[in-house]
Length: 269
Image: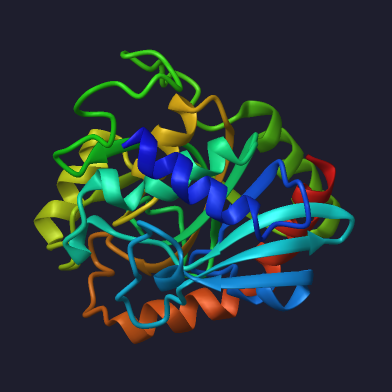
């Protein structure tokens, strides 16, 4: 594994003209940031050694190196999911490569179903904690010596970054929620009974991504900030058929607000 990570990192070093310490996974609600990255070098995942390839409609498949404002960044335009058939080791491979490239802070976004009755479609939820219900863990197997065998997760999402996001949102008049994100396997959307169960467990929103990347980022010693756009509701009395297109539309509608927060955070972090 380490040989592959190092080989991939060396491949990218030969291309890089910047030295980013900040990375972004451009999930739902953040795709528009691609157009704001300057001095851009874009590499298709299929051209990067050992990288998986995204198979989900609406998820691009390229790694972008450049600048956002004055900040050197590395951006993943599209992510990989367990439900695509990849192992969690494969889906999180890019995070370990980021560590080799010197990344210190990771920003992640996603679309999720709201199960907190105080939420509404279109809300932005700052992730304060998560529940891993993927029935696997990306650290399973031989420990890669980036971090301890038993990684502490009591502060998976950096409190200082959360305070920064709150301050930026308040200054810009953007309403944000806070909550616990639960990741399940997908690709089916949840049944009403599953929504009810997850709410009893303490989750505020549910999706199919993010948690594996965060676990590996923490193992690698990175600070992490995560944000979800609530694209549908899984609350008693509000259950309705959900399609991938509906989720994408709701995420696109929330994009200007999410981008406003993340743009400012990345330049301050």
